[in-house]
Length: 294
Image (cartoon, rainbow, N blue to C red):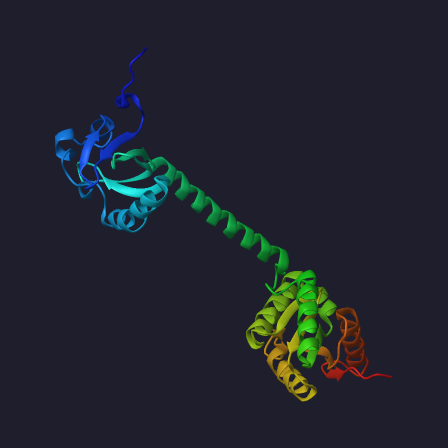
């Protein structure tokens, strides 16, 4: 029968007695960890364990061995002979003779792989967040786009219905926007849309939803806002928007407002604001009209 030696195994083998004194190490400790056997045999395991590993050894590993006789795949950190910290995976078995039989596997590469996987995960999460942002915002104005506005508005309306709060919905339509494009070009039209979007975003509350809903049409949803405050908000909006200049003249918008105090679908709510904005246009533009039931 062929004789086998623990020195042939690609891992560290170590034996300690009941007093935690090292009684045996294989050549792995010399070739991989640079320890000479004489520097370890007869010494306490404190020589090789870091402070945190000593605490884990005392508080968990030893009680587990006493209870179950075996511990598997414990993650510890040990010192090599030069004081370098080496992450290891440890298996230990408590023999009938009271000795503990240890196997040590170098986990440096695994830790490196784990860190690389963590970094990859973080990168993927950042990319996913960036894609989510791109999918939910209008590229020109950086406001919510039509799809995201619909999705979030439904949630706001459901919450308002549960808490019995009123909600305001404003539709803003830039007056004579086609003339701006025709007279000054589409680049000027884009500038106007972008500047208006920035002002709306800065002006509204964090709880408000602000979107470019299409073309020169913007939507603003105002949670927990009654009719008086909706009208006050619209008045301030007109003043704000007048600061956007086209050919040194103030930009104007027509605003259609709807206020909901009961449960309503987003489609119906939108239709009411749409109806009101057309009324504002019919009455001369640059004004706010509130939806009224005929």
